[in-house]
Image (cartoon, rainbow, N blue to C red; front, top):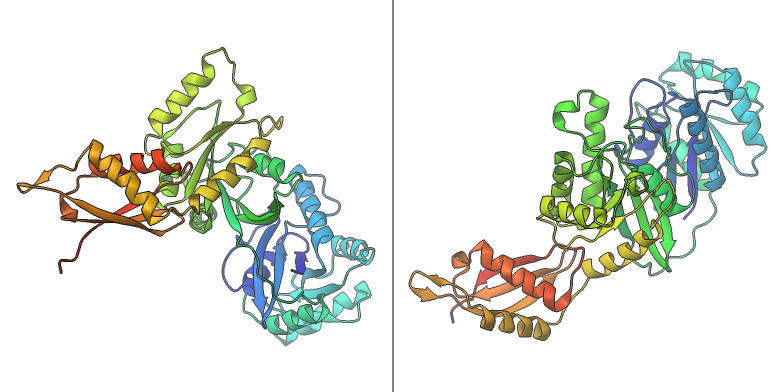
Length: 437
């Protein structure tokens, strides 16, 4: 799929343009520089042509400030990935030396570049935009990303200059992975380790990553989409509108995911916030892994690992199925095992068992421990069938659905796991009265 990158100085409206082309709000939008710090990806289809759109952090060529320098590097990486670049400028700020420096850099890139002038809402701004012809370009595209003016013309010109997409093919379904956790537990560093390059700005300041950012990659010839999220904070600590939107983005990323990597800080241990965040994933029926990061920073003896595992299992008692990995994103220790585990968990999340195998396992479970009495009669289980995946879901036809206690449901769940595995994924049991003939 062809790739389009939007670049430009901070606060020229890149995220607003990204959202306008994408068709809904995905990037954070505020009126101060540096809101979008990382590369933000979206798959877009316009005029029946699909392409990948990248929003970038602000490009300040002369900046020495660390975060702005990192944002500049992210922009350069996006330019390397792109088939076409949209260089966005601000008519209200006028042509600046930084704009001229970025334009000079883009001339050295052997890729098509469209020069778009933003915040053009009327005739006066249209005339002012002529100043940007001083950059030596033949064509300027005037737009108002906020009000949607000139967007279709810009998009049409983007599509005209993109390489032709290959014909439709039966694509293997992508497994979507969300990395979630409290701020500053090392999510971005972990993502960068997994992908092998600096895609997400990793900074020791809590909350550096404020968008949900998608990156497509392939592992063992299988396609994946990795979503790195802003940290989820307690609602009481979420005071600014920007942080509130980040929480919503994180939860939306979780809802989009198939597999969730819940990152825990080994130094701080399990917190109430970790339990809340993991609870979101469990309630949504997502496959889940617990990844304990910063394991290199923990002083250990021969019982440390066992105690930590026991503590996790006690605290996350609602996640007995979740595998636990101990890693260090800083050193790379055991990070390679994460993708292998994701592959296993994703397979279990999509696993189907035959009706015959399922009923054989249930028959053994019921024989060993029959259901209780209800209103003077023994409850009966007639048969079961799998009715869904993601998560695996089973319909169990019984004599009286309302009579089955949650403890017996838990017993059957455990027996199904003993028989078939389903490591890393919740499973759902649905009790239904058998229709009488």
